[in-house]
Amino acid sequence: MATSHSEVLEVHPLLVRLWHWINAFAMIIMIMSGWRIYDASPVFHGIYFPSMFTLGGWLGGALQWHFAAMWLLMINGLAYVAWGFWSGHFQHTFLPVTPRDVVRDLSKALRFDLSHELGVYNAVQKASYIGVLCAILLTILAGLAIWKPVQFHELAWLMGGYNGARVVHFFGMAAIVAFLVMHLVLVAIVPSTLLPMITGFARPHAANPATDGTT
Amino acid sequence: MSLKKPIRPELRQLAKDVAPELKSIERRLFLRQGLSLGALTLLSGCSAETPSGVQSILDTMSQFNDRVQAAIFNSNRIAPTFSEADITKPFPFNAYYSKGESPVVDRANYKLELGGMIADRKPWTLAELNALPQQSQITRHCCVEGWSAIGKWGGVPLRDFLKRVGADTTAKYVGFKCADNYYSSIDMASAMQPQTILALTYADQELPVDYGFPMKLRIPTKLGFKNPKHIMAMYVTNVYPGGYWEDQGYNWFGGM
Image (cartoon, rainbow over the protein chains, first blue to last red):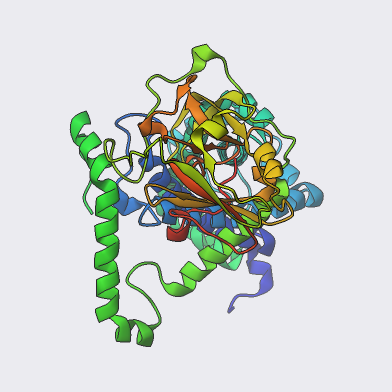
């Protein structure tokens, strides 16, 4: 690196970057194979996923992908959550956040009036990350209830039974996909946020067009 | 692969009906291409479908999931039961072939064959099976595809039957061979779960042909494809017996 260390800012620690990319890989496998499984017997009539966006080739193949990647997703997720609480990462990065802050920052962002500070999340970002982490957790729990509705039948009961768990799993997926679309759109709008998620570092002056909402 | 357009229900049903045949034709074509591309496949080390390295990881993970499910499985855990009012009507027909193609087993000549690690391998007639103590259940049948339906089955608890015929219940597997060339197998712990029955009735009536006459395995702790119909032979073994769908890639344990 040509610049001296004082000019670069560590935006994402190594553990966060590792978690992020392993999670992205596992999540994409889960979503694409999940769509193929869903298509075998749709929860909502008339809602299908085009097979070109699915993984596995047929139901049996998709199930193999889904139940292999779930371990990667789960182990990676558990490690992240344990580290996040233990290290204080969650408290520092995602808190405090109040509904009023979220409304304020959201209206600013919509008016392109929200500046992007590297390494600091605005309230909309904080709320989105907390929200998507909760959605992932809920989707995993609903998935466990569908996978083991007898062994974990209390969990299935909490989800409104076997069919209720399928509905929760579907909407959890939908929330994650909605986040993912937003996430990618915002990275496309502010591409300078992409490199720090790979290298960990950014030069503060290199990314400051006061235009963006989030990533 | 094309985008799915909304299709009329009868066409969808037709597509569903011919799907197993298409699958097997697809498979045969794939195998034939596989033969002609054999040399190339050996050179490149991958198949036309999922690369073999990736496929072997997926297979390993599926076997790992068999072990995890066996560890999670608690034979005292009772599958939820339902009331008569919850029963799905009509209960859906399901098989790897279409409705109307089910084998018609001759009642008079039917004898359940026993094999493997069983002390008393005398075959059982339908009348003899019907004379044994029976048990009924209203449970949810969950298909691997995701749909489910609630039905009422009655029959002989497999646990009692295995003891009665002197099966070695320390063996690993109980296997089933069926009149429709279907076959499947389950682990001994699941076989001994109290709700696992050799079903002889559906909705208090003799098991209809569509639902597996003369006998099907009803095991509410496993997915639908682990509930073989038209059972002709049962055996106890320590040699992994596989299954019709399991050998094509469905997870063997198929537990719930």
